[in-house]
Length: 256
Length: 256
DNA sequence: ACAAAAGTGTTATCCTTACACCCATGT
DNA sequence: ACATGGGTGTAAGGATAACACTTTTGT
Image (tube, rainbow over all chains, first blue to last red):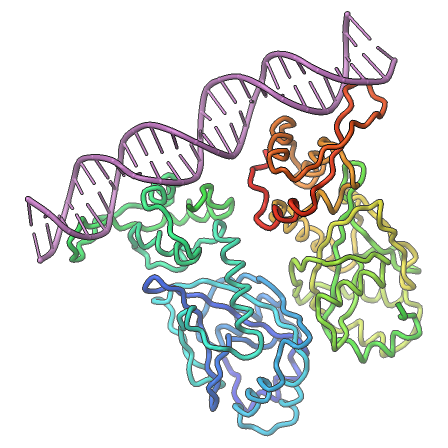
């Protein structure tokens, strides 16, 4: 990452005009979904991590680079989920807000940011405990925010999160959310709560367990011994190969 | 449509640079899927109907306008299915081919077309018999081409059609393909063959019929009397309201 | 009457759903 | 011992898949 405040102007000429990328990165902890947000320096406004595309760069590569540059989070892939092209999707006041947060009076940068942008949305799910987001030079905070506590974001970023969630729910049975969001070892209840959280509905404990066990994608380990006035549950991990295979054809059962 | 060869240069300054739209329009006839293609004037190269976005125009609106301008086909909506952003997606030789087909030596137009473009793909299904495609001033033909006879197209347009088909198959149970692609009245076999064609697999006649009838979305009419040494089938049409409702939650049965 | 294709019925099998039951654990 | 939650069993109902049977038509 060699981008700094003073080098923005130099980069502008190497960027595709009018096109941006925004990343919806979902994390999971305490049975709640979180989303990775940046707070602009010298401003109280939050946004999704986003950025611009080099003139000689694949769109998918740009998404990974942008995420890494702006949050320090590196991933193998991101899922493109929608392109946002509303004529008025960026509120002019929000643009001014961002500009003033940059604290640099530079007509080249101003012109760049004031153009109309169409933005491509990318989605990923990651384990919050094994990734360590860091704010970049444009932001003073980079944090996991509870999905239900997400504040009003700049531009149409709230709408982007909505769309990403919709995409996530429709694709759920084809996405390895377990491996992406849970620690390496987890209980059946953990797995169930993850699906319940994403789908926002409760599932039958017995049936969920039987359905998942039948897939043969789980490896059963020793019981965990956490205190609690109850039977200690088994710990599981995923058989990576079998799990990935299953994700290609999708979970064969209904999550009810 | 007021765009003409001589006015292209005037339009360029009103277009979003680096961004284009391409439309995959599927039609159905004789139990085969077709796709709407344009042949460039003074060239033997074919392409999807595509175009550029006005600076003050919603992306979705632009897609409808472009389709209408380039083919005469008007539709209420198109489905955005993917954004194509590969760095090398437009073969430079193809760009030259298009340029020479325009037969106008104009550096403004040349510069415009030689930039890198990211293209947003839109999909729709329409009834081939009630729409009448017309070539625009850039094309000398605008035709329905059998999906399995689609020639090598310019740029990455063949790949776009592949992606659109994949999207179509995954979304099949949420898309009103029957109403979009069949005549107003049709037989059960027509409907079955449509689904068989799209899914590229054969379905059980008896089960298909029972599944669809159970939905209560079909209105049964008189029998048709076409010659043929066999029992005359019923004709059906859709109960529009119930059908649209069903498409929101998706077909409840498996197509087997 | 027969062939061909349409319409309907039957059945075994599987999946879903909603519980019930027993088991292990810490207090 | 008992409350709590984990693991497994079961049975009714529904959906699926494969196929058989009946009906209608033109020749």
